[in-house]
Amino acid sequence: MKKVYGSAAEALDGLLFDGMFISAGGFGLCGIPELLLQAIKEAGTKDLTFASNNAGVDDFGIGILLQTRQVRKMISSYVGENAEFMRQYLSGELELEFNPQGTLAERMRAGGSGIPGFYTKTGVGTQIAEGKEHKDFDGETYILERGIVADLSIVKAWKADDTGNLVFRKTARNFNPPAAMSGKVCVAEVEEIVPRGSLDPDHIHLPGIYVHRLVQGEHEKRIEQRTTRKREDA
Image (cartoon, rainbow, N blue to C red; front, side, top):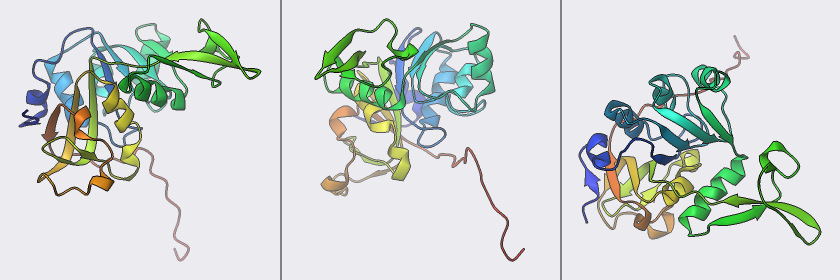
């Protein structure tokens, strides 16, 4: 089965359709599938629902799809750093489903593991719990959260071999493994594709069985919030 494609557009060919549900990896600007997001923008696919920790910033990440009004709904845990996101949400142009961060990650992992739902204490007694089934276990109240199964998952990894085994670099691992698991089809962009057999099996973060298509490309190394201090000898 061919998994390596020549470009992000080629890797997404035949997968995109209006109104689809996409699960995307990344945390802030770290480990986001920027090449695939750009390809979705250029394809013009609209009315999209995204499950992602956040929506990037105004001109990067999912933010570029907000600018072109291609996103209908976000399922997220954090919505800061994006003025256009805030404007669209407050004006009623964008639907938003808040999820606690750990709950969102577990919803993705559960969906990819064939688990339709799970109970958690997180969110009990808050707006997060409204309309959800409540159940008591050992004297404690839990709410039911549903696993996420998306039409497509898009992720960014550091290295891959041609079978789709993925290695993520440091904190870029973040939401990428559970996001990859949650898609019916997973497309991964990577910085480097290495020969089969060159990856240490014990160092593989996501097995290739979850990955259907791969693309290698050049990536920006943006810093979302740069914090510095004066030199002591200055």
